[in-house]
Length: 287
Image 1 (tube, rainbow, N blue to C red):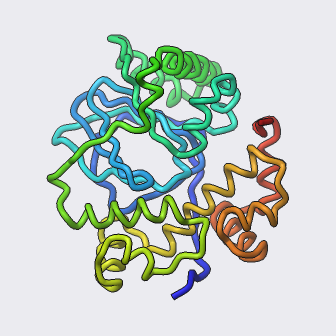
Image 2 (image 1 turned 45 degrees about the vertical axis):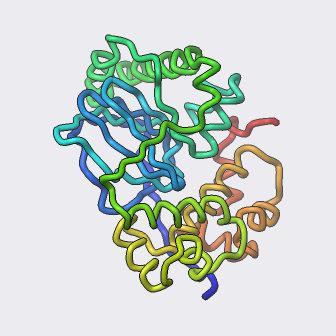
């Protein structure tokens, strides 16, 4: 079975912040901002691009949320601060550090290994500023978040930079999630190619019908829909980091044609790829 067109809508949240209880997510989701999360107490596990990433208490995690992601395990009682920051703000803040920028634009979740005692207080202040309705206070919060992200990057040691992800065996998630993780990992490595449902099922060594059912049960998405999301994420990254033509980006992302790419992109984001590139403005990165 070949890939079919999917109709996706990916939400836009802007600059926002909340303090909330951590809960399991019914389905993976995407949005256009960078997420900066701080675990006040407890721990949670993300499933992102086939990797389980554990974030423990008193740690920040940062990633570009355009890549489909899902919380698959939560320690009971976990509370965390959840911030979204437009990519157009974050990229200029970190553009001088190519290692970190590449991680961000490739959907890697970076976990802070050098927390400060005052991080929780900072987060509480940022929530108050963001929700205050005051433009001046929101601007102060942006400045302080920029500074904290830069300190995050500056304190990354050589050892930190040699690591790709913080991993967890998370055996309690069970064999079903293990199969889904294998399929998600296969998709993450092969979505730019023409892949079928059978290819994805074969990667996990299970029957195709079973693969379809458990994938949707765990992620909340159909397999083909999930592949399309990865292709859109890849295309958005190329739109702001390269001077490739729209057709070249469509083909490089695995869409097969510019018309198919246009249709999926506009359905998901509400504008055409060229318009999205123009709106990115100064975010385009010269490599």
